[in-house]
Amino acid sequence: MKAQVIIERGNDGTFGAYIGSDNVPYGILGDGKTAQEAKEDFMNSYNEMREYYAEIGKEFVACDFEFQYDIPSFVQYYSKYLSLAGMERLTGVNQTLLGHYIAGRRKPGTKTIGKIKISINEFGKELQHLEFA
Image (cartoon, rainbow, N blue to C red):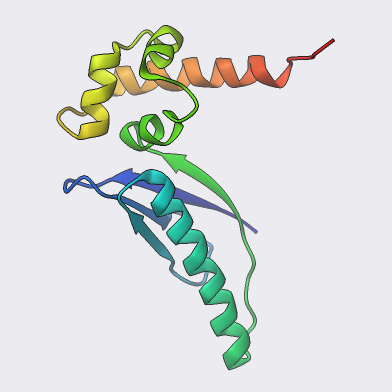
């Protein structure tokens, strides 16, 4: 079964991960100071839930998770691979503004979210078709 997991930055600056699909018969949460910590805590909770179901003899529905990020979580999580300057070149969104999204000082509008999503998706498609000689 595939299930969507949403990773969001909270008002307190921490990150949370939760199941965003209605078809999963259990609830799992993860949290952390970073998006990565929230994702890791979520997966740890998933493994603990699987173990608990085994202990009580209940059938466990295994899931393949697709992670969906809000903009602050995405930028923070992938900043270890792409600098803010690189993301600016890729998306056209000023790196100072991207930094404000990470810190929670500003929230991106619908138009900016769309611009970032399109740019990142196009970059991903380009990488998928990349070949090395």
